[in-house]
Image 1 (cartoon, one colour):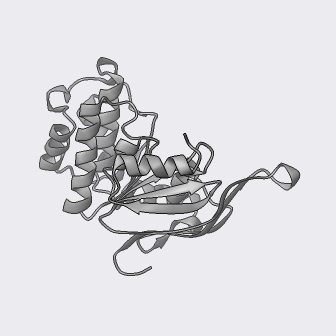
Image 2 (tube, rainbow, N blue to C red):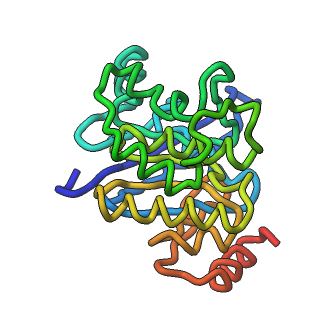
Length: 244
């Protein structure tokens, strides 16, 4: 790892099944992301986007290759140490909100801190609640929120520990355009203010255009990238990959 690198993937291969039934999902992917960057991952259906995200986040072990987050090779950690590492250093925003119904908004957001026995920074919590538009709903239970509001709770929860890397699988998929922009602006802000690294999978060129870099996958392999791209440029690249 070079100084300033947040995430490094070295020759990541992921195969499901074995023998004649083996299905390759990732075919030797190499990727290095610097700290304080915002990266979107795109590609046609079945290109390996979610598999790459899960492998990078330590949710799924690659068949071969190395995953390094900061100075830690997470692909070699035991299950217990990997769980602890993810809790303390990684944030997740996935399509399933995974909120606890018995807890209110504020309690759901601060749950990772309680599990890690870390001190709550009240000012940071208030900033996150304001940024995702939920300051007036902090005492509501998930059942009293819309799907989009629940997703915003999940996003604030992913950021509350100021994690080293935040991974998102379609993090704005359940949000309207205004709420989605709020969340994307917040993620862009944290990359700069906290030198945080954000990696998200999306199918939406408008969402991807908020990222510093868009990485394209096809058939489980790296298929190029665009920096500072417009939605039109991203759409053209996706069209060339056969998505539309």
